[in-house]
Length: 467
Image 1 (tube, rainbow, N blue to C red):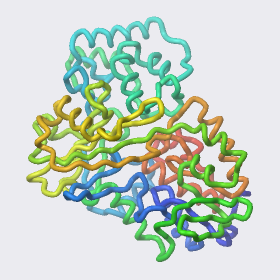
Image 2: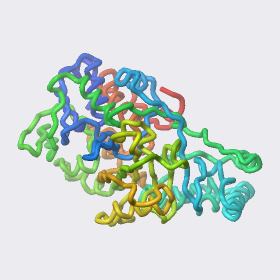
Image 3: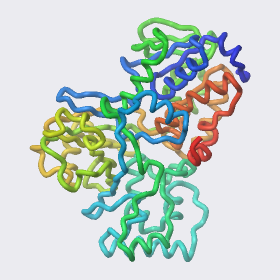
Image 4: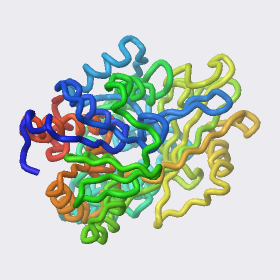
């Protein structure tokens, strides 16, 4: 498709697949431009995608993982304020790493003074040796970890944790996605933290975040969906086929819809697999991703003293199956039926061909892990459990990702198909809620005004100064 002017875009029938942040962002931007020649097709019965929220039978609210709301964009900030106004709760991030039978403040590499003496010395020795000897240019994420943090921190925390979260060996991942997501290490800072015994916790773009007062993260996207023109969002429309020659979509309910421009936010491999683009399917099948199991545990009583102010915690060790636990009742008192009588924990467990999961006993193993790591004292506290499987959970930044994905983008755009979003673009470095919404917004701006898509094409820039 040639770069379209706004006038040309007005003449097109635009189909948007998926009512998650990206699809809603594209649709909302079209309405801002005064256009109504679009339809959003959503397979489920609600908006939100991977940013949806659910209420279980016991009255606990759950997200699909530990979402927190922070932003790299003024546009996104303005929209969030419009959607929820004064219905935001604001939090100082308090995140920790459970390791060596203790909580170490995050970022771990800035707080190794909290470790037992032997592990502290190993980490510091690795940093000193790295400072003295340097390291060769890394070829993968595993080598990047060692070259950036030394063998001590790598072996104790970063290598086991990253296998646990990605569900693939770090040596099979690239490191181009890292950017702001991993704190760099400053040896002088680490040493002075040790001498002063000072907790160093302020690093990172999400050291302050906001969360909806009611309804979980999904409330944001339900409200954005409500701003779209009547009839422009259709639920229960699972896409099963894309005829790119005839520009026609087929849905599970037997209906079909023509399009001139197709914006897809479904996973890139799924889109191509359901299309007639046979030549692209072998490449699409090589895309790697991990599945995420989200396990919510509703609890009687109140959080123990050591959890009363914590937000989330990382778990690199084998004492638990989960890589992260969130004290979800601390995000909003309305995430539980009665904050005077209940609290809640939400855990995430990754799965891939390289890291299988026993699904039948997953909830039991998670609860066992809560006891083993001291998050709860015994199983009798549990009054509710909830399990959600995000089949596509993390878009894995595998070593040949860009060599695979970029030609697929080109081939699709030649057919007026634009794949965007967390799994549509397959770029983990720009897959947060703000990034995802802006991928939709910026695509519409490109099609209407020929402006560049900064989020898709320049992640390092958008993850720097606020756009």
